[in-house]
Length: 352
Ligand SMILES: Cc1cc2nc3c(=O)[nH]c(=O)nc-3n(C[C@H](O)[C@H](O)[C@H](O)COP(=O)(O)OP(=O)(O)OC[C@H]3O[C@@H](n4cnc5c(N)ncnc54)[C@H](O)[C@@H]3O)c2cc1C
Image (cartoon, rainbow, N blue to C red; front, side, top):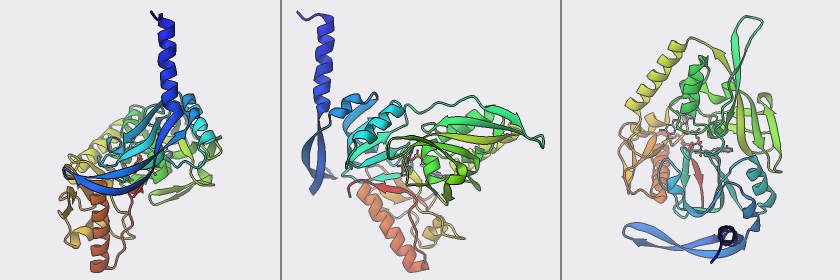
C-alpha cells in the first residue's frame, strides 16, 4: 500500500512528465468537412518544454480559442497559459525562443482562425485583477483628483463602476466596452468621444527581455484604436489611472445612459466582436456598409447585424473562415460602391 506522501509524489511526477513533452501542431494541412464543420489535419511535433514545470499558473494543451473569444469562434491554441503572476510571464519570456506568443485579454476584439494558434497563448484575465484604493489629492486650483493602480485583467465595465463608487470621473464613457483594461490600453479603446489614453498616467509592462518597466504617458503614442510603445509591445500588467472627483449621481446617470444606448443599438444577444472596421476619417464604417446594401448579408452563420452594420454576429455555428470571408466581401463591396477602403479594427490572429 502506498502512503499519502508517496501518492502525492507519484501524482506530481505524472504531471511533471506530461508537461515535459508538449505537442505542438506545427502545420495544419488539408481539410475535410464533417457534419458541416471544417476539420484540419495537423502535423504534430513533440517539443520538450521542461520549463513549463516552473509555471505557477495553469498550462493547458490544445485549448479551443472559441471558449475565449466573444465571437465564439477559433480553433485550438497549442499551449494556453493562464499566468499566475509576473514571475510566470518572466519565465515564459526567458524560455520562449522562437515559439510564437499571443497575449489574450478578454478576447472581445479578436478573430482567431479555425486552425487555431501555433505557439503559446498567454491569458492574463484570471490573476491580474487587483485594484488599489484610490489616492486622493487637491490641486493648487482646488480640484480634487485621484490616482489608482489597476491590474491589466480588470474588466472595463467593473472598473468604471468601481471608480463611480468613489465619485471618480474620466472613464465612465467606456462602461460598455466588454474587454480588459490591458486590451483597452493596447487598442486605445474609446467611446462617446473618450479614449482610455486620456486617463492613463503610467503603464507597467513586462518587456521582451522579461523586465518590468513603468512607462510614463509622455513616452507612449496614442492613435485611433492603437497605442505605440517605445520599442514594440510587451505585456501590459497594470495601469495607473488619473481621474477627477465629480458628482456621483451625474456619473451614474451617464453610465446608465451609455448602457441603455448600447442595448438599443448593438446586437448584444448574439456573439460578436464589437465594431469590425475602424471608422474612416469623417465617416462611419456602419453607415458605409449599410449604404452598400449589405445589412443582413451572411456567409454561413456569420452575418452582418441588422441592428448595427459594423457588427458581425455569430448566428450559431459560424466558423472563423466565414467571418473572414465576410470581412473581405464587405471590404470589396464598400470599395467598389464608395471608393473607401475599410480597415479592420478587430485583431486577426492564428494560423490561417
Ligand atoms: C459588444 C462589444 C462592444 C464593443 N465596443 C467597443 C467600443 O465602444 N470601443 C472600443 O474601442 N472597442 C469596443 N469593443 C472592442 C473591444 O472590447 C475592445 O477593443 C477592448 O479594449 C479589447 O479588450 P480585450 O481585453 O478583449 O482584448 P483582446 O480582444 O483579448 O485583445 C485585443 C488586442 O490586445 C492585446 N492585448 C490584450 N491584453 C493585453 C495585455 N495585457 N498586454 C498586451 N497586449 C494585450 C491582444 O494581444 C490583442 O492584440 C467592443 C467589443 C464588443 C464585443
